[in-house]
Image 1: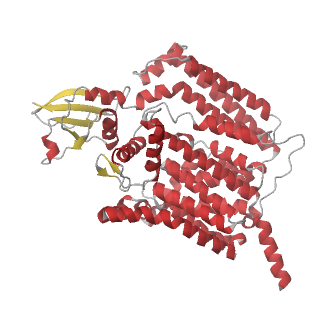
Image 2: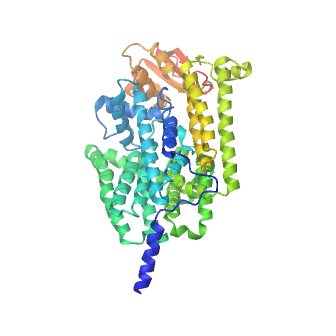
Image 3: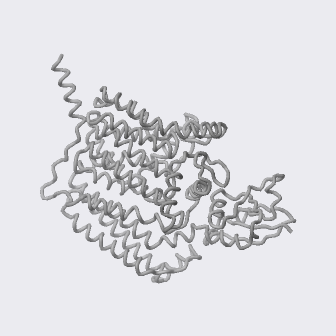
Length: 566
């Protein structure tokens, strides 16, 4: 009996040890100084897009409204936009973004200074996911996991905007690191697990705690590495660490307004998003995210599938496989039960999939690895060539047909070629060529080429086309034009105007609009702003006259019209 117990404990200990790196194919070696490459890719990928453009609706407009309320009033317990409670998400992200705006507002516009918060949370996520992979897969694999996350196609657009989902992503990464560390250091692993779950909760509500809580319950049922007293110690430490995150803000909200607390808990929080949909409809939600993931999580998803399949006979005995797999499954199930479905909600899935991708990468056969390498090299080169071609058409007018196409899509854009922009894009293009040469003999070259290409193409595209995109998405010109037709300190009501548009009008001009409701005080305002389409627009009646009408340059759907009594 004693010998049997010893063998069982030995097998559990062996299963919890990080996996060793498989032998490299003959003639191939790991990339020299991989951390330098990874850090360079991260910088090239994170910084472009954080500054240099106005807030875009709808998500950034909501965040700007929350942030300006905190900065102007100092109140953060009740998330508020234009005087109205906005309880969809807890206040961690707008609070930290307001602190960033306060810190960097002297040198950057408020929206750019606040958007740096997204870069901070992305950096936390990258460090945490690399540390989790190091715990599970051993030294030499953490940087590959960071590259797998950076290279995911769905990651770049949302995490460069002002949205709380970025903080939730960081929370999931920290929690996964805690679960991985707990196999070696139970208490510290539990503390990091609790901190990560708390960050996710204060960012987007109970989605994170539900998915992670379900994972820690499921792990001991399916994997021997978690059937021990150490796991109970981890859970105890996690509970102690997460309690402040779960309790302090809700308690303050309840103290300030019990009615708002009940509204948040039952109606406007992630609780309703999870239980607000009939159970029989969960296959629809599951099908939605399964249809999104093939491109959203590329190439992490196919690599992860191959990693699971290649280790299918020993999945339960390999923490590096079963841990991220369980977290992926539980997160997917919780998302499938959600009331609303959006691509951005799938961001937490990228964290475990990035870890799970590395065993698949290391198990690739030579032919598949070479195919991945050539596809990555050709795809990155083609996208860079297309970027230069379209940049020439847009800014230089060559070829003329493509230039006319670009200007037809965005007639309000003013061509502006700046030599620093061209020089930076040329430098990044040269970096791509140098990367291909340096990575040629590396066994890790498929993922290095793919992720490096994604990072460099993203940076070059933003350098070349950010002003063009911002012209069509910004409400600055529209707001300024409206302000010129509104008397100083005039009362302005709005009808059918979306909250993002109202927030941005206030942000750019200081004009606060009240909702137009017949019989209410706002209906007595002398100025009325209406939103609609050219085919369908609210008509206030014969007592009003149109003083302004307009839309964003190139916007053929949305129309704004300003009326005045008389």
